[in-house]
Length: 198
Image 1 (cartoon, rainbow, N blue to C red):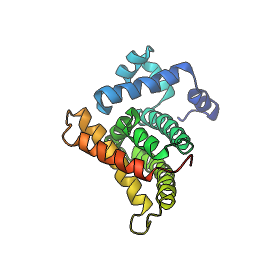
Image 2: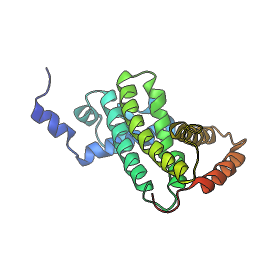
Image 3: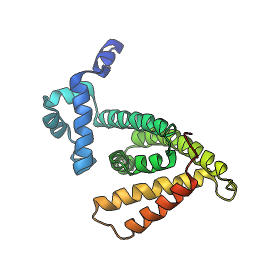
């Protein structure tokens, strides 16, 4: 029997316990991977009874989706803020190199096994890429770069992918080529940075 709309709304309310469960799940996923984020582990870290996990999130997929949505909205807000900074290209690089990128990659792994997660990731990824592409497009045009030869969407994919790969490799203890890659990126971000706030 499905719960009533009023019950669903109360469960989805932004309660302290619900927020604690979302934070705990994200922490476990970051530190140990998504497979370690069981309802018991999440409840213990959040300091609540295990039954509360299933009260707010009838399935683990719903909990994972709540974590994904919370993190994605924060990243979208941060991404929008980068557009108003003096050095938006550098800010985008830093955003793709931050802790959020590690959690994003954990969700990518989870998406291989859960279609609902894959669909949600695709929707947010489109929004991220739209903003990144717009920023790269403005920067390249400001410097007279031929955007047919260097399509902004491709350039944004290269920059974001390299940043995330470096985060992934650092987590594995791999650092070969990182210093050189970062120096290369810094030189080109300096060269093509937008002249003043975007």
